[in-house]
Length: 348
Image (cartoon, rainbow, N blue to C red; front, top):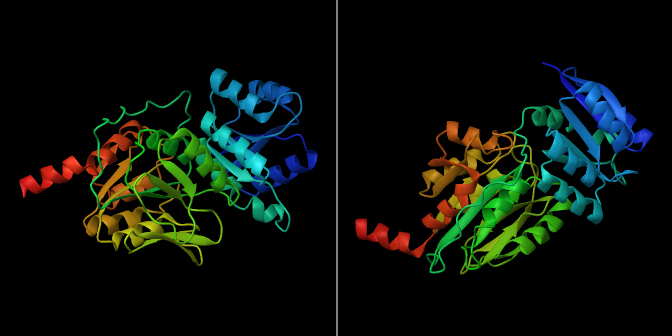
């Protein structure tokens, strides 16, 4: 099945580079290009593409305003194409919150178009089959004010495509005294610091981009930085974050599998959850966690933007329970609560 694409960018050069990258895939047909949102609006009506690639900054109407109109009036899969700058990262994150399926970075200093757009065709094909969100997700119920974490609890999360929305939804249900939480989200190198700052503003716990040696304490959430290192957790009192420079694992760096495998080796009460994303990174790591005695959850198909990573984990027996996104946060907190620990000891 051929995926039809409309390329929207104000730069003729960039439109040509994006179109060329997509045309290398025989399963994709670039049916048109547009230089601004006004041209794009007409082209969408005329061509009815399966997917749009959308520039963030354009004349007449910026990409965010146009995206908001698309999601309100004619929801369809959109892949944002952004500059890898701080400002570009913040705008792109806002686009992902609005409902864009994915984002890729434009070529930058020392990076060719061939390198920058190496996986663009694959991302576009995944977007074509993604669940397009047309409104805000249902948040989980607010946590009881009397909720307390068990002392040795730790939460580990993994996500990819659709993860911005999923993590905002999930972490919005976490209280300020949540268990220490570590996250690997597939994201361009310049985006993770902005995303951590965004989560910190929206959520009750303290959220930051992980640094080597950060202590894992209650009320703190650490997001793996994009780039040359994997995030791991190492034993200690308290346990700490470790950034290990190494090759890609499961096609990614940072890799969810690396994080989950490190957590599986800890002598702690661990809860792991694998969220929306393409591919299978994190599935084997979640299985290792479950085999080591951790409680494991997966996002269900209906609420996943892309049911790839959680599906791979479910099919190999790594997932104890699959839940809709809105119920994952409360389920994690229930498993990590001090009262649950008391009930468990009473049963045994």
